[in-house]
Image (tube, rainbow, N blue to C red; front, side):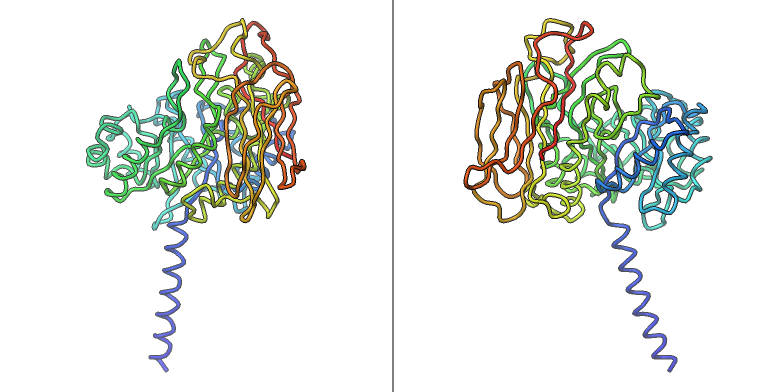
Length: 440
């Protein structure tokens, strides 16, 4: 009898170990969340979390640039309160660009680390801490923080010596400090004066070194960078950056993906709502999600998340969410390159083009996408199962349109611009943020 019980117990323990290993090794997808003022009299925090859950995210990476601010603590408490008991978590991403004081971030972390919704990961089930920037504070500072707080440390140390140039040497110096690393800048091509594509070359090098050191790796997924505030203005190409990056992440197979971002209106790469109570009038001139929503990208991101978590290595395996017949979006700049106002650094990399991405289910055949600008057809292109995307040159002023055609040439779905393209500045500058229209 005892032998039988011991045998059964061994089987149960082995099964539990396999389940635990599966959970520890499961791929996760986060959304970088810029913590700003959220009015507690609204349901904005709830809307953020509910939308993120519907897209398929596992957690928000909470970017806190002002860890001592009461408004930041209020927003954090709203988010943690609503996430309690849900299959959705939160964790801190210390913003060292905004505040370089690790002790200030540590104090805020300690105030929230025991919240029910705080994300834990790894064999020891430790609280996760990440960062934006942070390599410059050095390995010793991070080592002291990790030893004092016993966290799963997944920072963005790319400013540290050897991170990109000799990643194996980096891990030799930081191996006892980090559990994984997050590369931020590889999510876009560098600002340039000519069109250029995003590359995963540096990701592959760092990922290989991380694997050899027994560390995890996180890649960033983003659409574009465009900023016209705070004394600066720049553009990092966004024509097809989002779908290009999806294909790269599926090929590289990191343990984590972080979408940059959920709500950073100031840099235009938001996919969720950007609450006006936390934004300046300067940013609202171009980064207003009420007048310029980017939610049309959410079904594409949802399709990617499912493929990534399922272990797909090719974007051909992507399928529309919820068993749909299609998912997709069109995006375009509201001005042509002939716009005569203030243009951002890197504007030479932009093209006058209508951009699109469409995901079709397995077995799709004979489908096409038709792109029109200013009432004139620019191109009709084939579409097949999985992810299809393109940047169709020739955008002119006026209305923009994307149509999905069935095998018989009939229009199955379309996306039409709500705002016409212009060649004139608004408020004295040429807005390089994208208008995003979901396929319906």
